[in-house]
Image 1 (tube, rainbow, N blue to C red):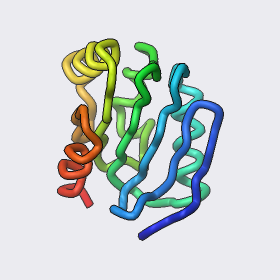
Image 2 (spheres, rainbow, N blue to C red; image 1 turned 60 degrees about the horizontal axis):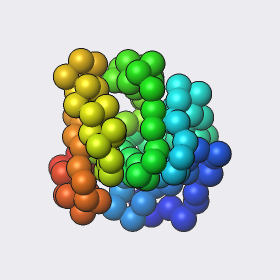
Image 3 (cartoon, rainbow, N blue to C red; image 1 turned 45 degrees about the vertical axis):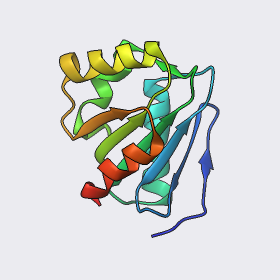
Length: 127
């Protein structure tokens, strides 16, 4: 299930990696928005059409907003994700992560990590 095809947008890129899940890299100094989520889902549909676990790698100064948290928590708005593992770097990201899990209660398994290796280990149970 390896793919060398990267789909690159202004704020992020997505591919299916060698471990069999989506890898989404959110670039530095951007706000990942509802519009970006729609682009991600469209790219998954047009290029891969697979429901897989998702590894989200957030660069240190990547950010999002409260509106996105409410939308991304619902399976219907993120239909190609079986489970979400986020690798986060900053204190602001940790605060948003706690808010997301406690307030928005994602409908699919979701966990936050400080290392990519730990996130991959956790995601492997959803392949």
